[in-house]
Image (cartoon, rainbow, N blue to C red; front, top):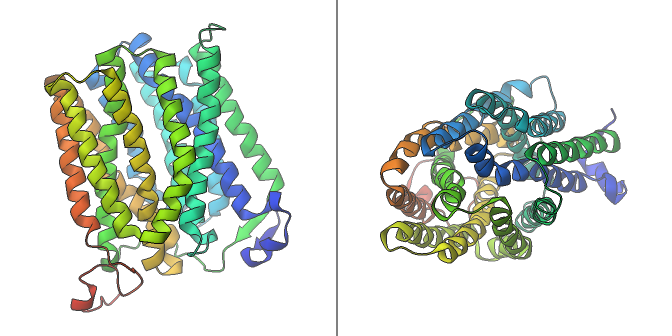
Length: 409
């Protein structure tokens, strides 16, 4: 396959440029992953008889490949990041297509592990490619547009589920197979249509852990821990506590997607205008409020409408996580992007390996307590975000940098 320098890609037609490939990948991934997520809670309850501890174990297994994302560093020694992205997306598509064939605890854990390897390794190299291929002055805006593109793809998938699930009495097997197949078709097109793009900055192909990136690592750790509570238990609560069925859960996700399609590009521009520090502070204050109100569902008996509004608000706040990416892009050495993306994904998933299973048992005792813990985590994230300087750059990674000697690395 032809290799082309990134600087030469501007001469290509728009449908073969790197940014177009990023958009196609942003569309391909959620077609599988979002469909899997939309149907999962109903599928495991109806077909596999899962309870809170079972779903916690499933998500713990799902996060193990994320914890092992540092293995990407070893793979890119002999495989280009762009190729690894395609392989990972293909694995995600195949695993999603076969999910309904394994309606048992053991079967779901196995197929979830394969799906998760594809998802997490794709996300690791995709983040690296985004930061390498996008100029710093346009990265927040384009990242916002990429989030909107992914939301639009998911909107199409969810809209199809809502419109056809009851009308055509669809099966879990058909929907999973169709969504996984669409991802595979897009992957095939990307492999055929695009050359291999060569970044101007060769990436370090070994494990690195730099002291001056410590705040980035801390933000990633807290983001992963906090996000797990929402991903695992928010939708599960809607099914378990309020009895939402497949089309109701999907309609809720549709509202979320429309909001993200409209607001994600705006949020990207706001990050560019007001800076990563202010954007993250706003996000974490909002998440503290959201998680406290989630607990109020159990403490004060808030109804399904309040829960649905909180679910949408939570997803909108999470779109501001792009600020963590652009913060790192501003402070990083260009050659550190790929290995640090892998290290950061592992750090992001440290808590994810044990937290879902542990909190699954806590959920059986106190669902409100689980959300209170998430609010506390958002508070810690807020404190960390306030340590980001107004204009981060190498040598000015935190507000303490002017008062500390530069590390030897």
